[in-house]
Amino acid sequence: MAGLFDPLVLREGVVARNRVWLAPLTNKQSHADGTLSDAELHFLERRAQGGFGLVETCAAHVQQDGKAWSGELGVHDDAMLPGLRRLAEKVHQGGALLSAQLFHGGLRADPTVSGMPRWSASAHVGAEECREGTEAEIEAVIASFASAARRCAQAGFDGVELHGAHGYLLSQFLSTTYNRRADRWGGSLENRSRLIRQTLAAVRKAAPSLVLAVRLSPEDFGQARGLDLDESLDVARMLADEGMDILHLSLWRAGLNTTKRPQEHATDLFRRAVPAHVKMVVAGAIWTKEDAEAQLSRGADAVALGRSAIANHDWPERIQRGAPIHQPPLSVDLLRAEGVSPGFVDYLRGWKNFVAT
Image 1 (tube, one colour):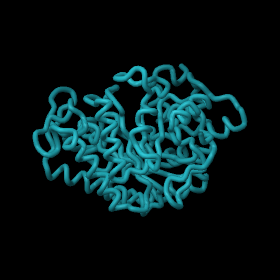
Image 2 (cartoon, helix red, strand yellow; image 1 turned 45 degrees about the horizontal axis):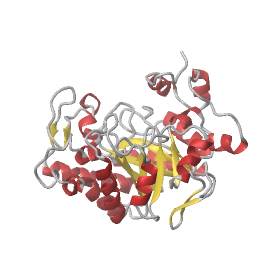
Image 3 (tube, one colour; image 1 turned 120 degrees about the vertical axis):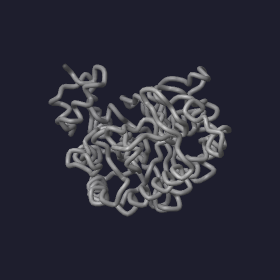
Image 4 (cartoon, one colour; image 1 turned 135 degrees about the horizontal axis):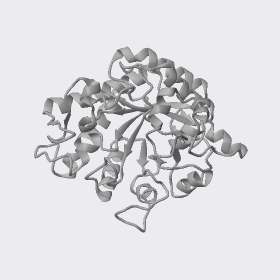
């Protein structure tokens, strides 16, 4: 088993200095138009300086109608390029690789933020009302993912990740709950996976120099509904066959076994499902060195830290020197010292027991 601080070759010429990565984190720090802010740059730059091997952006919208919250980073327009170039320069100066998480909110987009109506695989009514996407809109969003990846390559990023998890658009098409279409985009798993597979192919063609990752939710949890563990394993196999470099498993609590197969762990299952050349990164409540090493022992190549990285901008360095890890509830002063802006702190107050009252 490789160690947490062993380098990891992602593809020829692209090497992460270690196997501890920053997970994609909603931080609500971008400007209203999606351009990078100084606060967001500072937050991500600090994690690179703190020793993370790869820094990933928050979910960044590839189309305006896919924007899901205020303060969301955009990769949807060439006007974003100066900020993206600046981000790549600073993260690389800190010694980390940089990847952008590309996404479209679909049913989870917010019209009050985007100024545009929602669409998804199928029409839905209620609090999250939206219409069924047309063939033209589906083809256009594939092209938008590809254009976004091209911008990231132009900006000097090392990789991009397709956000196929958490019940956003790519996940909605995979879902039997959200996708009730009867055309070539719905019904069988082959059809429901067509969007994410064609998006993968389009991104690969548009930005062949980039390491290409896909994030998946293995089974139902939270907003990720209508997902079956065995179907998710099949989707991972398809994506591996079609050129995925990295599989990113979003487990929420990485220490737990799967719901469908209580005796088995997702990391073990997906490691057996995809070939060894496909790297696998696992995220989900990883706080300690032991938590991280447990995932490597199951076959993960790297771990992605979310909340623990918010609390500890230098988690990798702390682990290496045996320093204690900051654990919640966290004071506002500590969070500010860790590079968290006031706006981000306000957002974190919505996380139970994370910010000290």
